[in-house]
Amino acid sequence: MKHPGSCQMLGYFAVLLVASLQYAASRDLRQVSEPKIPASCESLKGNGGDETSVLQKALNSCAKDRVVHLASGTFVSGPLTIPSGVGLWIDSGVVLKASNNPKLYDTGKNLCGTVNKVYHGCKPFIHMTNAVGSGIYGKGIIDGQGGVKLTGKNQSWWDLAHEAKIKNEHQNNPFLIEIANSRDITLYQITIKNGPNFQVVVSQTNGFTAWGVTIDTPASAGNTDGIDPAGSQNITIAHCSISTGDDNVAIKASNGPSRYISVTNNHFGRGHGMSIGSDINDGVSDVTVTTLTLDGTDNGLRIKSDRSRGGLVTGVSYTDVCMEKVAHPIILDTDYSHTATGNLIPEYRNIVFNNIKVLTTGTFTFDGFSDQKPIQVTLNNIHIKKGSKWVMKHAKISGKYAEDASGSRC
Image (cartoon, rainbow, N blue to C red):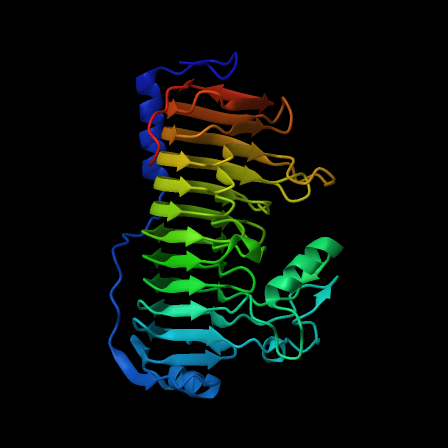
């Protein structure tokens, strides 16, 4: 067993006690179980054409606690709003495609579908705002068509994202699903793919469940986070499979604190990992990540911020996590943008790692801000591959790790 530095050791049972108390306090405060699809109010068949008005009319006229059932075929649509208390059921074999016409998403500033110094020029494809008990259900597919050429342009949404990165400007691409100022929203079993931008954004919402959701977007897509809870609380992400072009999950806090979050029994493929940050100035706390497999992600368990957008991250536990082919299995970084300025200093306290197995070599980074504001971490039962690199700066780490991980697959 190796000590990660000259730091005070906690006894084995003390570590277990801290970890168990941490887990009990950190999870979603709701009692969350597998969702059920509500009864339908109307059943529709897709013909492959644009059916925005048909879909929106059906959603608007649907009774609360019911769902509009897309029963068969392919539907193409511009932006849709799901009303409070209403759901959308996309059945197995059905595809709902987001229109590739940027004009349909424009907010009135003629920005959508452009690269510009100004951002937020697009409406989302599916929007829920001030909603209670709404959701999207079923084993069908929502296809954002991020790689399809836009109407009137020789570029796709993803081409715009790459151009924006080169120019250091903003892509004005729509979020695929945006949930704002809402309560008890559900995504169940749905497959989401090819998002033009972030794929599921949950902001200022109390109560959100993603259960059995599949997100499948190429690594080449760029800025396409899988699920982003931001300024929200009582969040459960469970039994999901997420592969994408950016963070698989990214917990943020720039429009209010994020807390009481459970990420459990998930599998992450390509992507940038299980992330907290980078915008965390309002604070992130009470996060539990359990039973997670990461296979081929760039990063594993990651907390990232800098002095322009930092805040306090505390009460985070990672338990029963297995990783393979992950370049940076653990990375806690307070200097995410090296050129950042400001006084919003990131602080990471009471971060606990329990029962972590890493089957391939990687770099483990604990990069705190200063000796006055160090990263504070506890390790318990950590097994990594021999030959891995351990990088520490301004970090207080209790516990130890062993370079004895064996096996080739999680």
